[in-house]
Image (cartoon, rainbow, N blue to C red; front, side):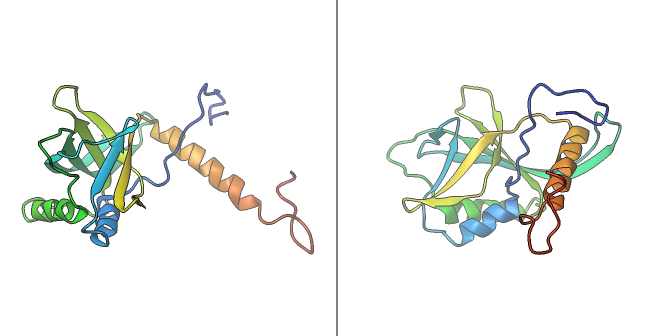
Length: 183
């Protein structure tokens, strides 16, 4: 793949398109309050006794590697992945109640980028992005994936390339339709 400055990247860019916001997550969970909420990361589910140990919000301003100003809001939810006694995974409604309690003291932008900080209390905290929740066997499952570093100018360029490729090609040519970009 070539970039605007014609340098080839060794690895393809993996653009995440279903990275959910805090508002998306709360909206989904609100419809499933009684169901157990199970987060999964690194190929396994959090232990049934997990805790939400901290919720924090931030507004960030930065300059990216292309000297472009960037600004965004982000909500961080810290999960302590521990098992305590005979506990089960917390109901989705309890998680929603925790976040609603936070909003009494901390302003949360419901459109903010959502990042989970996960640790078992021994290993260092790792950062994860959340994907769209789903219902699996009567439980709400939220898959977490490591949040990778990225080059925002390259991300924007690749996204633009994907949009331009998908916008020029419609249905197969025939009956008065345009051919697909010379392909």
